[in-house]
Image (tube, rainbow, N blue to C red; front, side, top):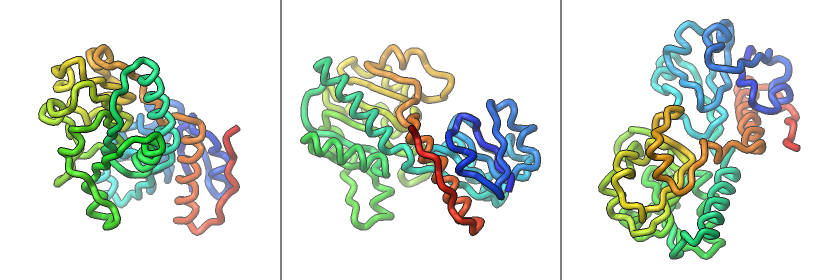
Length: 283
């Protein structure tokens, strides 16, 4: 099986030995020509995977080395009977480390107040962050209505409970699907109800926060973000408004990349009925 992978991903040769035929690409401009005769595309979230990219290809599987899939046109893939493989949870420890480092920085600068924290999106990342916050003595409120529908053992708090929090950590997937769309979930009405000096930590997707509404909120709302709407075209006013901001690197650790490649490899080997390879481990 022919697989085309992002060259920056580690451990590719060990993860995709024979009978896979591995080739790599270095930039999006190479993809239209490079996709010719390929069956698997292994990409990162920086690539928009849609009909424009895949129309002339023979791709059967799209694998993304990311937890989020908002860069992928899932409806088009379903229409074309192209299977989607994600790496959900591969970056959980990395993102949780990022949140803890951000909180340490805020603590050092005297910007943390109370001990109530809210988690928006309680998948593998949100669950890990929640556990760490509880170990630090925080009372944690978990908001994730879609998970409550699927997991009878999970109880989502009402959204109003988040208004009393001193810290809010965003770890939801970005989507428009009713009845619980996350696009602009944190809109003007939500933001105006937050406590003064509330810390808003966004390590999910920029579009979950309505950036225009954020710019109208008082400076007492402390915004820390790793993500931005419309990436890579970032609104410079949001950078200026942020107390702490980074260029989408929360899940960008070596360990997370290895884990994502391993997930894609495991799933593809299972699909093809092949024995699992021995993966390379990060140094």
